Image 1 (spheres, rainbow, N blue to C red):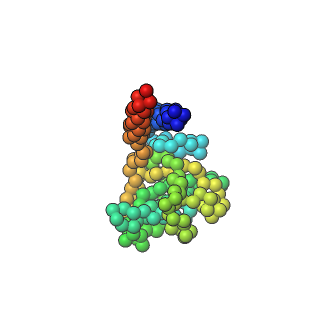
Image 2: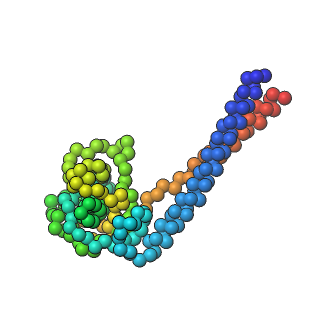
Image 3: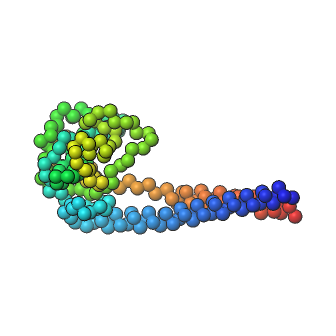
Length: 216
């Protein structure tokens, strides 16, 4: 009898956990919808002058560029081919640099570009957090060709702070670079997760009541 009661307690505990996780996913789903709606509204706004005081993601900004530093190239696979994301650091002031994602260049066109082609005075784009390295990303082995943006390394290299947001540029005059588009990649799997947790909770609940009936 004691074992049966213990089983009921365990089942009830898992019902509570799975229901809680399902409810949490529904809450996150609504929050994500609000975030996406705000992003859509932001992209309908006009470009606003970039400021160091602006730490918000997904804002359309206009940057009047100062001097640029050595370009950085990120490995990127596009349609099965190795290409390079072109990242240019710009001096915001004497202490801070701002990274600008120019778009990507095909490997075959790499020898055709030079630094002076990246000197647009007006840069239009949107702000975004600098992506962090995940467990599947290799370590960087070169000072110019990266697998990910290493803020700590860049701050040592340029002896300046790296602004926490990157500008994803959507206008370019460089014929070799494929320009970025307004593409916001926010995963929104919360509905699927909610259905999974509620389904699991329902199955455990059925087993719980079935087990109670057997004990009578």
